[in-house]
Each structure stands twice: as structure tokens, then as C-alpha cells.
Amino acid sequence: MPKGLQEAYLKVTPDKNGLQKMFEKDRDRMINYKDIPDDLIRSIKAPALLMVADHDVVTTEHVLKMSHLIPGARFAAFPGVHGSFIGEAETAVQGSKMPEMTAMLVKEFLNE
Image 1 (cartoon, rainbow, N blue to C red):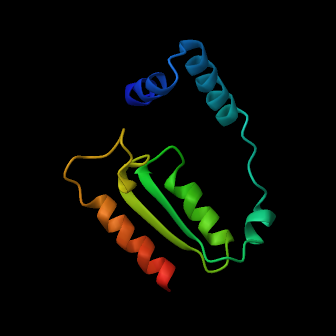
Image 2 (image 1 turned 45 degrees about the vertical axis):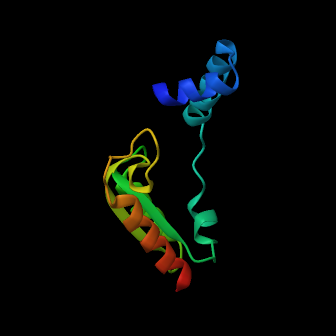
């Protein structure tokens, strides 16, 4: 768990056992995650914009495949790591225009 997230948790709830439990629950959730069946993804009718970083937790290939399953879905891949294109605190690059560009892309998508 990134140090900044640890510090933020402990600032609000100074319980290291609670932090460990939260970490274990999050880890177990990721390890035991079951894929959503393709047919269920195909049933999505709402407009969808799937975004991923090229060095994200999930692969760009997987997100691209999902975008092909959703009728009319849009796909965007950004350079960076998980969360960096939205300016997530632990992965943001100082001075990067990527979060601003992402916001503009999302706004344009929502206005379509």
C-alpha cells in the first residue's frame, strides 16, 4: 500500500490493526475477483467510455476487448500508470496536463 495512503488512513483512524485488515480485505478482493461474463458486458446499453493507462493494473488489451463488447463504446488509452491520467495523488506527475486533458475528453464524451 502506498505510504501516502497509509499515512492518510492512520491520520483518520490511528489503528494499525485496522489498516492491516483493510489492506488484507482489498488484497483478497483483488485475488478472488471473478470476471464479469462477456454476455453481461454486451448487455450494457448506456454510453460507455473505457479509459486505461498503458502501464495500468489492467492491461490495455483487456480494456480494449471490453470496449468491443459494449455496443458503441469509446476507448481511450493514456501514457502512465494507474490513476495518473486523472491526477490520483499517489501517481500524479507534477505539472502534467494529463488530468486536464482527461477531464476535457470526459466532458466531450458526456456532451455527445
